[in-house]
Length: 194
Image (cartoon, rainbow, N blue to C red; front, side, top):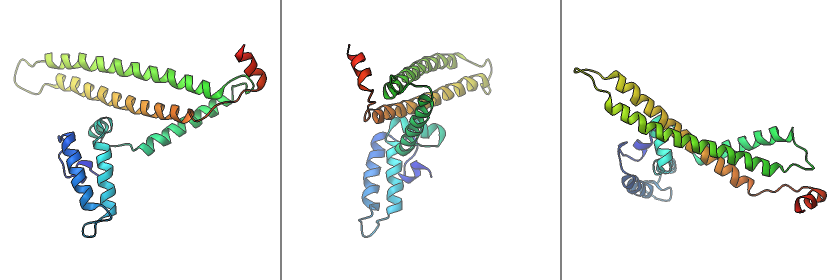
């Protein structure tokens, strides 16, 4: 499914055009409309709008042709939490170790690492853009060296998109963990309070 085709737009359209076209098509294809109501078309238009109106999701779609829904992010968050629980419960002392706190700390540390990777990648893009601008051919022809550098820039942009998606997963994992607490026994609570 081509999301731009679903909204009857070109890939270079503006966010405002996406919003306007979605409003028009949603009214036309809404299932409650007697004449043109089409529930399946309405769902496709809605999905296209949800992806293309979000800059991160749109950039991912533009570069890969794939899109992730919030359900995909939720499933990944739950899967990662499941893996963490399996890993940590094998090596923890349930009397003294706070499982929830350990998971939150590890997620936060990994999140910082991903943020640092984004910063590094953004600096690399600036550097590669400068390099790309300075690569010139002495004669007319295809500038393959510039093409190599430009391809590397696109690869780094995709890495940033992936990192941003990972940050969304981490954010959801922390939100899920925020609904829980780990009850240590009374002795441990007294030790912690001293």
